Length: 163
Length: 268
Image (cartoon, rainbow over all chains, first blue to last red; front, side):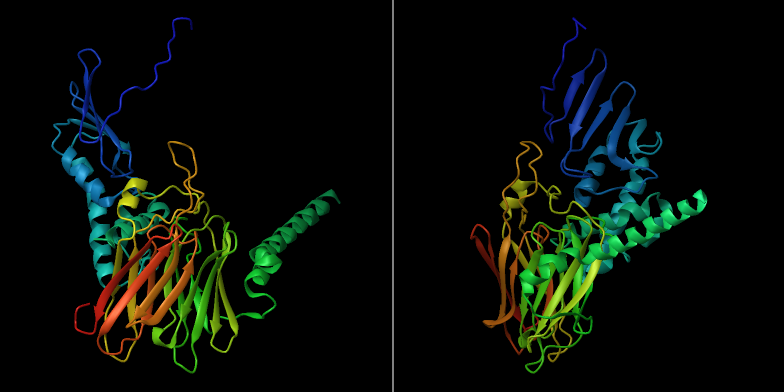
């Protein structure tokens, strides 16, 4: 224990300024993202193995949970889709080898909710009635739909009504 | 014998817990709330004047959509004067008092509230003859008053007071028109912690709302910390030809904001 030092975090990764860390012939790129799944999403890319750790920016199986911004999330997935990743480690679900296709279910869910909610709001309907009406066709594609979908509707409704 | 005792004990516990639950839902109401807001006046539990709709379980306790429906249209002879929204278990139970007029057309209201713990939510309507009618729902949700903001405070402050006032549709001149009012305001409850400094953000919320149509009041309200961030209100008004619908707010720091929309010239 005598030779043990506590190393505290001393570098900040700013949004829009990826940080490339060389761990010794092992460059790792850290990216902080603008508000997407949450307001503090970070992804990690290992160049040697072309592996992307997307964290909760990609959900597989488990219904995506929106604590940040649905629009921001779609934007970030668009930006990450250019990475030449051979391997994806998602925040929920199995490791996949088909980036960026592996993010398609997350994108499709967000896009469907946004599309249906936008029409719903334009027609003058309120948030309470939206909870059981929007994007019900997505239920069969996901686990934990009943646990998180209504919450997502609330969040995205409040986001879209200002468009 | 021991077996019977156990069964009896189980039954006793079951009985007690159901009794406790039943008492719980009205405990605060019967022990202070009703008196402090309505004194000795009779408050009838009766859904025939207004009925409250709320989710049984709220998925986001900081933004719980609720709706109050009036059972009859407003008229100078018979109308709902005030709807008081109370959340029994919130630190400040009074979410808001909403005043309606014959010109409101209907005393319907949809809004979003914070819920701090499993609670009864109440809407009490006062009719123009001075009677009080209560509609209540029990909502399972917790932590809504202390939940962190949905956005960053800096962003929220930058757009403070931005308002959106929209007529939802106008079918016929004779029928009341639904209006949607959205307000950009963090409506800080005073119970939300800054995640970095671990200090509580001071309360900062919309205190007064005034909606007028050609300077005639349509909806007046006094609101408090139980209203969700970015307050949203859906209500009605009865247009009379062309005019201007105006919404004004004042917050707890005495900031005031207003917005207008033209009515009756197809500009909605």
